Structure formats: C-alpha cells, structure tokens
Image 1 (cartoon, one colour):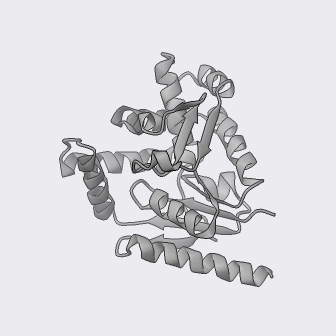
Image 2 (cartoon, rainbow, N blue to C red):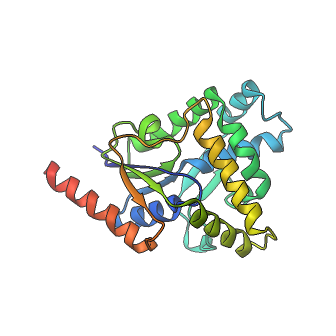
Length: 231
C-alpha cells in the first residue's frame, strides 16, 4: 500500500516548496497537480482553442501525454518538478503570467478535471506521494493517510508572490500583486466545481510565521507518528 500525503492551500501559502521538500526527505514522489492544469491551458493556447470550450479541451488533453517527474541533475535551474508535454520539456513555459491568468478558466471545467483527477489517482495508486493542489484532500485523494491545509495571511502571501515575480524580472507593483492574489483566491474558493476548501480532518499548517524548514519538520513528524500507529 502506498502512503499518501494530500496538501491543499491557496496561492503563495508555500504548498509547492514545502511539499517538494517533504517528498525529498521521505523519498516520496512529489506531484504538483496545478502544473497539469497549467499544461492544459498551454495546450489550449497553442492550438487556438477557446478556453471556455470544454469539449475541445477534454479531447485535446485526452490525446496528449502529460508527464511529471523529478528534475535531473542537468535540470537544476530552480524548477520544483519537470513537466513533459508530448515529450517536450515545458516546465517553464507553463509558468508565464498569461498561463497563470488562463489556468483558473481551464480548471473550472468539470469534465477536464475528471480526466486529470483520474491521471493523478493512477499515479498515487502505485507510489508513495506528496500531492498538492486545491482539491486534493477531498476529491483526488479522499482517503489520504495525511491531509494538510496550508495557509498564510493575505499580506504575507502577497509579499511572497511579489518577491517571486521580481526574481523573474516582472515589473509589477505590490498593490497589483495583492489584488491579483485576492482575485485568484476568489476564483479558487467560489468556483462551482471542486473549490478550494479545508476539510475537517485536515491538519492546518499556517506558514505566516514559519520558516520553510519548520513547516517541513511539522509535516515529517506527523507522517512518522502516523506510520508508528500503523505498525
């Protein structure tokens, strides 16, 4: 039986970084489900498909091969995971501002989510995984061994996002970044299909005043405690 860690949380709460490091420490596979929706958005844009056209989107994703794997030594360029689209490395192409704006539009489609959720569940069935996203704890891995809701204050998350954008050479004011973050939160929490929410059984990790290492240590300790109980 595989051990499953499911992590949900809003943008810039630290989910991706913490999830990847937890996976590294435990020797688990790290799965960034958001990258799969970003890849779907990239596919739509490349093929001039209307982002609202669910039928064409689903058809395109079904016939495309989306792979997620650990970065190789030659790919140590700051990426958390390597994304292959039909064999092409698109790890950075899916991280543009345009993709970020279009991904929530793509992610709201029920049929598309069903296709990608099935892919995610197939991966988790065969490997020990740390999977993070917006609907992992209740939709993708409802029976996960450990469920986590990671969060942080709006201002802290906006500061992190702003620093991230600046490091990428993006000239965006803090206020604009803050408003974009609030807009993204609204879309994620209010969409009709699989919205971001905290399940009752989830362990809450507020990273507002935590270092990355402290957050990782908290989760790792919880995993080890669960494993001891199961022995």
